[in-house]
Length: 124
Image 1 (cartoon, rainbow, N blue to C red):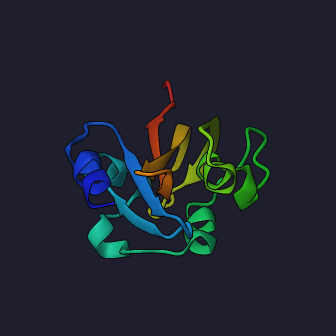
Image 2 (image 1 turned 45 degrees about the vertical axis):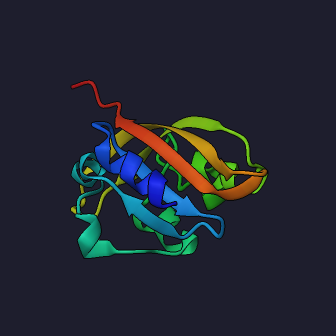
Image 3 (image 1 turned 120 degrees about the vertical axis):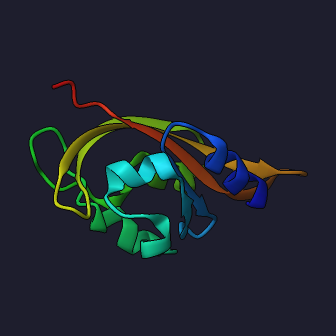
């Protein structure tokens, strides 16, 4: 996870990093702009909190349950997942984001958590 955090910190696209239990362990500076707060202000969050605090909704504005989020899907089945949905960030701003999540595995076949790369898909 230390290497995952260093990798995420060096990326220019937003990255969200969670451990095997789904606890948010880090998001990088580009993610802060979309999420509305610096990681230092939010700190770690359990999956039950981060999967709802950013208020994810589908394209029709209906709330998405945690299991509808690509990162939660990756935690459940240890396979990559992808999707687009709206979030309302911690500043109250609404963003359409596209997310691709991947499992993080160490050697030998040791599940370490998951990483989500995402970007703002608003084209206005």
